[in-house]
Amino acid sequence: MRKTLRWLLSLVVLIGTVSVAGATAGAATAAEPDHAVPDLAVPDIKDRILAIPGVSLIEEKPYAGYRYFVLNFTQPVDHHHPKAGTFQQRITLLHKDTSRPTVMYTSGYSVSTNPSRSEPTQIVDGNQVSVEYRYFTPSRPAPADWSKLDIWQAASDQHRVFEALKPLYGKNWLTTGGSKGGMTATYYKRFYPRDMDGVVAYVAPNDVVNDEDSAYDRFFKTVGTKECRDKLQAVQREALVRRKPLEAKYAEYAKANGYTFTTTGSLDKSYEAVVLDYVWAFWQYSLLADCTTIPADAPHATDQAIWDTVDTISGFSFYTDQGLEPYTPYYYQAGTQLGSPTIEQPWLRGLSRYGYQPPRHFVPRSIPMRFQPSAMAHVDTWVRHHADHMLYVYGQNDPWGAERFRLGHGARDSYVFTVAGGNHGSKVAGLAAGEKSTATSAILRWAGVPAATAAKGRPLASFDARLDRPSAEREPTLRP
Image (cartoon, rainbow, N blue to C red; front, side):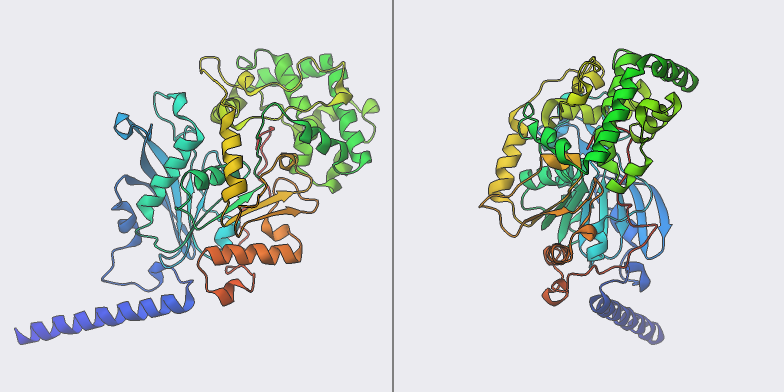
């Protein structure tokens, strides 16, 4: 009996020693994952995550230095009436260590199920929770009550995810996203200002007054160089001048791929929508140097050359029923709250039959829509007067930055920076040296990193070519 007691006592001492050593090592390095030093007294991180109410495992994928989980999280369809029904929202968790800061990322669309790391996550060397936006497949209630797709409901989704995970990931939290994801991060901060310790929003549009789009027209008059603008406009004109032969080619292309045009109403409307996106899409995803890839003499180019450049830049598959369907939630929101740009494109006068078509044309008629003109003005007023620990990064040559978030006198410890010559993939890494250091230091400070380390203005984790996101995630359509 005494031998047994001595053995148990030794085991307890050993466990305590391992636990203290592990905690000390974690405090010293602040970069070792939980599983690096096994602690017999603490359950595995997967078990701790799955013990959270509403969380269930889809799969775990290995990645060196991390644990990566694809999860479902039970959400109310309507946060005003949480007992009225639920749906499964897909989230992913890139786990580094519970002693590290955590970044909540969203693209504003679907979530990738492959391990990846946003720029703030690399900067703070932290964990990352990625949240799929409600109503994007598969995170869609069945049947779908589209009236429950709005910016407050989506912010409330994020709030519930945060509340569920905060007891486990107790250090500082940041939220981030690019484009519609940057908008989403902003709305979350507005509706739940105490959740996040900081916001990093990239290339986030801010369409305060939906019917006032002159800022975009001014942008396209000066972006890049006159030579580049002239080349792009000439291609657009030729694509409409040659509408008949190129639409015949489009019909063959659609038939070969099983594409249909019920949502837009006709192949002709879809064709023009693709062509009218051409100039915008070029500047959204390309750089000035890429102008060399545009046909130099469009009037004398072959039909195939015109088709190829428009397809490469805009994408003929997008304005088909099959291309639009995954983005129905975006166009629904653009037509009910977010707003959407309309630009003049005077160089197409006399050739365009429809002009920029509104979001209503890209959503099935069975889904009712009603625009709420005060939604964006409300958020804009809040950001101007109450922004706190918020960073906005824009690209100089990105059309979506023509209408952007701006800071007023009430803003505190917040910044708006612009990447010179940057496109829709602009990041902190592309800023001028001084602004890059200021932005990086702010992110580290908001994440709770010690002041001496934050002041250095350098990311805490090395760049990982597979894990870290590319500079721009190309999509074949005009959308943020």
